[in-house]
Image (cartoon, rainbow, N blue to C red; front, side):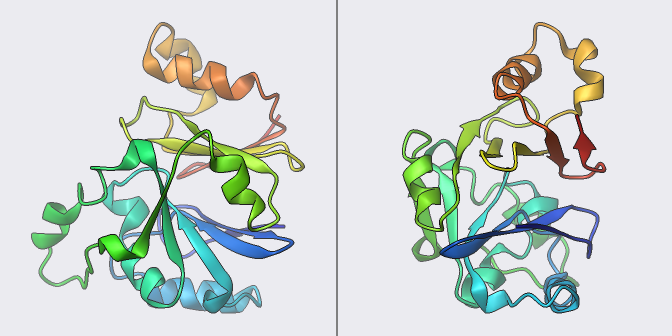
Amino acid sequence: MITELHYSGTNTYYIRGSRGSLLWDTGWAGTFQLLCRALGEQDLKLQDIRYLLISHFHPDHMGIAQEIADAGAVIAAAEVQRGFLHAADRVFAQERHTRFLPIREESVRYVSIPESRSFLQELGISGELLHTPGHSADSISLWLDEERAVFVGDLNPLYELELHRGTQIAQSWEKLLALHPKRICYGHARTAVL
């Protein structure tokens, strides 16, 4: 089950597997209470989130990651994202009026891309993570087999693909399109149904 949560300028997705749930991306720092309200409106509980996956570590996608971890979730980061977890810390340090908790290493579980299928199976979710650089070097996407859905964070939208021929963005889209998705879930645009 996929539930899109609307509480900030970043699309957040609650994904329920047969043995647990994960959250894909978060909003800016200061949106934790809005997340809790959005979950409640969908009859979902913050405490049921076992893992938080972040498409890339820009401020608008990871701002409340540690607060979610403090509520019981584990931040699952792809190995290719190691070294990027604190990329947004200096941005938030300049916003003194916004509450921000930097990610603590003990809250993080690193997962290699090849091991991502077995990691997702822990939740009863059939799918995998893919390294999809282009928007940023640490960008990953999430593929769900049964739903034929791909979650791409800020990878440039598919309708712009012609503008990016020959680039890393195009290579990432080629990898994703080879899976024949039926649904593309963006970080800021509306979900596309193919």
